[in-house]
View 1: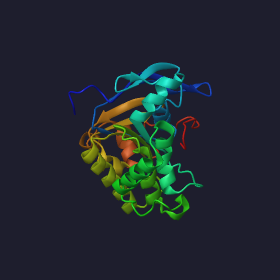
View 2: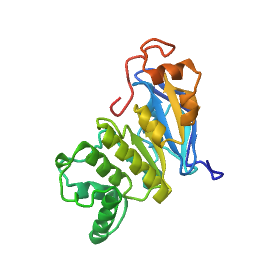
View 3: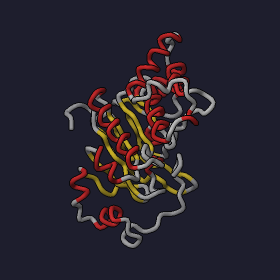
View 4: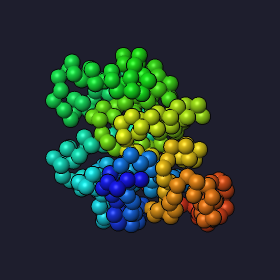
Length: 263
């Protein structure tokens, strides 16, 4: 998609949890402004990949770079600076229920900047307006619908104006109309902000709508890659089984899930 250096590079990534490899030699590159969808069965390593990319999990081998800078979980100062360059939309939103929506969006601003409170309030209103929640600043997460909570969480992920955002199941638990609204919002944000996004999802209609490229994982490895059109037309029996949702086929049952977040 671009002649520019990759926004995200993953090389030879290996993660071991519970004595077994959850990621086993993953290589991946994401270009600036690209929306990459990561799909696969539950427990295949999708969310573990996301966690390793954001520095929340130390790999046994391999490396991750964001904008050419290494992601090293043990390097507190470097990670603090790097965390300003990406946002994370966690599965379920992960909003702090005791805070208002506005206070949730303000959290990364208070943690990573020295902005005064008046400036923080302005930024919060701008970010909520960006996701269509300008009237929700004083509401609690419990007062929002599922789709509104996801949009509020996305506003928080964008609070520091990162060029890269990681989304773990942004459509989980939403009705089809709300899923479509989240998809449209991601595409609009990419157009308006030049955003790059890595989206873990089980929703293939959503992946086909938003992704420039789709990668499929199984048993901790990337087993297929292509554009949405190439995925639809794939002759790979593993891709065909996954798209059809068939119980029998080459995608043998996975080991008990040790994936992270909520997989």
